[in-house]
Image (cartoon, rainbow, N blue to C red; front, side, top):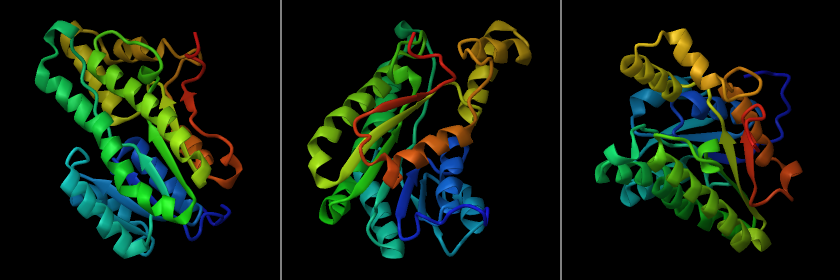
Length: 261
């Protein structure tokens, strides 16, 4: 934790889903640096343990499959028992699979919708009562540029992320008068395990080198590089801050200028 960071989020209880690695881990560290108490939600306690160990007094691990309502309810209750009502929810858990539309079967569609859309729905339903009672709160959905435009070979993923954008805009209108904001951050290709898996998939299917595959993915970013997880975390942090109180129902692209186009 950087001692020079202002501790202006002390007293806030932030719950981050998909917290074990990549963007989720960067979000956890960003909030912790500002003094928040953070509940880390993931599928495996073991995967969350190293992050919790960095600051056991202000972090707790809770486990759930975000697509399972009973597991989500139990995890959120465990988080409340440790740090009290949830004031900020970051819906970061997600999965991406690529395949041609004709080869994307029903199981793949359900997986993309269950994790990326229904996971966001169920976690939001679990956190919202705390915020409504407090008449204050922040919900930030980590969507994707795939939720703002189309990409070939990820139809199910893009459809789910488009649905998250629709959820964000609609719920923002419902809760606007309750002191709650709902926004989305839409990263472009970000240096995470999901990206590395996609690069490996391209290499396996096309015979391209790692450098060639990486160049293919980064070509869409006018800056010619991948987004870093910490850059996404900074956007989430800002949307959760008092200074963003009038930002509501927005979908902010963090993509080096790839969108709009």
